[in-house]
Length: 92
Image (cartoon, rainbow, N blue to C red; front, side, top):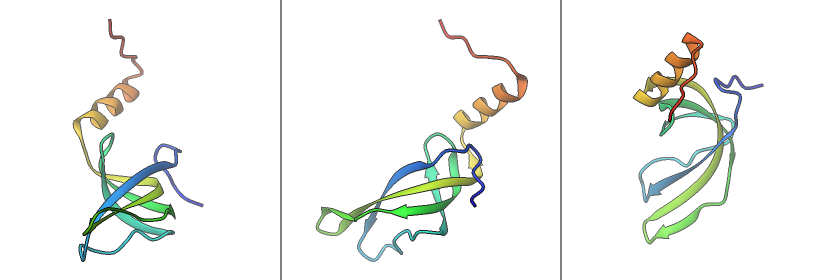
């Protein structure tokens, strides 16, 4: 069982250059940057088939749960502050 901060399974694509590091592996933790949350610690649940983007770069699709936000971005902090206050944002 995995502890997810939002209860959702996310999908992502990681571009890796030759000799840049290890591929994401299922059932392992990894640190990534998510545009909605900021820097996050994630738990990888599935990894897809890598696809060549250029001669030295591959793109690896993967699915994951966010387990912890280590460095939240401004959008996440604003969303969290609104949730705590119980107010709803009305744009118009």
